[in-house]
Amino acid sequence: MTDASAPRIHLGPVEDPHVADGIRRAGGVLVPLAEAEGVVWVQGPETFPSALPDSVRWVQLPFAGIEPWFDAGVIDDKRVWTSAAGAYAGNVAEHTMMLLLAGVRSLPEQLAAQSWRKEEFDPRVGTLQGSTVAIIGCGGIGRALIPYLVASKVKVIAITRSGTPVEGASETLSADRTGEIWSKADHFVIAAPSTSATRHLVGKAELDQMSESSWIVNIARGTLVDTDALVDALEAGSIGGAALDVTDPEPLPDGHRLWKLPNAIITPHVANPATTLTRVLADHVAANVARFAAGDDLTAVIDPSAGY
Image (tube, rainbow, N blue to C red; front, side, top):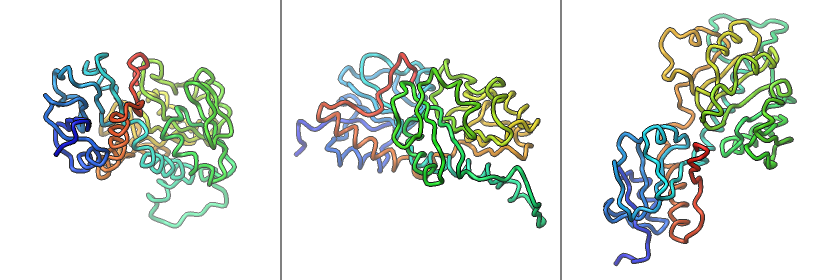
């Protein structure tokens, strides 16, 4: 017999087994949309229902980046909406550390080599140890990345909207002080949300302040970096390089200048591997179903006024 007090959750548009299990182990009951008080969606906005029953009080979206949902006009003010912000932080942090190390150690050039080369001094090959890394938008991903960096004896500067101290960071600055870090840090991780305020957060003025050995890693959204300005800096050698899991435009077209640069690393938006996506999402969903059932505040609530 089903517990009448169990939260009634609709899982759509397909019943992913990992997420379904997460809902059930949190005490939820899977029901048709017409009977639901909560909706968990595992695909994009293009498959989302055009209207939801009035009984739906909460909707869980499957991704951390939710701008396509705003663009599609899906998110309303009739119910609580939550994203998957923080759910994939461990996966993305691991990928971020790989990209940063690959850049600083000039790994792409080493992998492309077909003969033994060992110069007495190559300024393009460095180390993270003793460096300063700024994480712009130090949310769940940034917090998951910090232990990797600290283990490599890196000083971390965290940039958050409020400037509230972030555990493990040597220094935390509020978003309105972002301009201070471009000449202060050695390397930069871009992990901020994509909003009108963060478009081209990194442009020519910011790139001009960086050192010739600075690497930029972007695992947020391509629009946070001015691609033309970045390519100009990479071609001129005024910065060390860029490692991008996201690009603008995306997908990055064949023949784009970025593909030809030895100091650019491109991965095709795979920092969060599809092979583990719903398994990781299931834990996030389970936690929110349990909170929903208990009447507690949900995790990763979307703020429509902020755009994320």
